[in-house]
Image 1 (cartoon, rainbow, N blue to C red):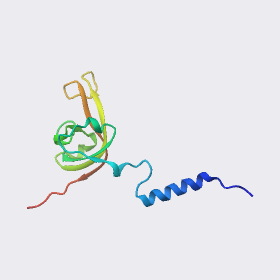
Image 2: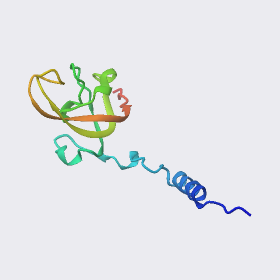
Image 3: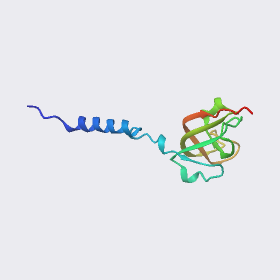
Length: 122
């Protein structure tokens, strides 16, 4: 008689538990921190955040008062959106890399999800 390996059984059990828990292992979408305007983004580098703001109509799309770029928001310029994503700290330079006319560090949001806020008619 062949013995059954425990690995497939453990894997199947883990997947079933994840389904009932609502998220798969490694999915941090439920763990995004809501960040408000003016909050220091340094402590969120490498973490998932959720922000709501109006996408700037500039060469490099960013979220209004957060001063955080998000290139994936290009099609949302002028719209108010709620975005989740991972905060990255990048360095810009004037030697051919990404630049806004100055050198230094800036925050970038690697977007995971975008939802457009519905406008309210008055």
